Length: 196
Image (cartoon, rainbow, N blue to C red; front, side, top):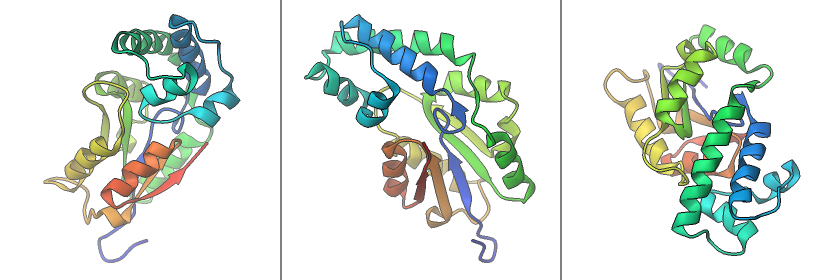
């Protein structure tokens, strides 16, 4: 959708969207569940029950919200196991070609993830796709929350000085794999496409 200098800008999610890491997420989730003596879950259970914020996801299996100590322990174990497993993950089939084609067509795209910023940037760089994005941004602050406020900051940076030409939220499409991606898009007035 082009009108004058306004073009559609894509905001990509990372985990489960551009990065095919579902297997790693399931293994890390099951390691976190073992910390509180919960039975392992399947991919189907994960897809059916997953929600944000993450403590609410855990509540669906525990029957109650995890205590602060349980949450910290589960979150730590999840991230440790995920980091070990992530190294074996590849990009989603066709993602690299799609990113390249969008950039080659003169269109802009960025990446916003709830994966920690300090971990995200070198990982994206390692897959060789960092130059495809005008901005790569991960979560700052504690894990487990919603993407909406992070999207707000991401949009402010995209539209600010030196940002994307003609940037306007109604010309942005957020592409992600979780309902939270759609909620974050709606929060800033953008559209969303969910990919599973």
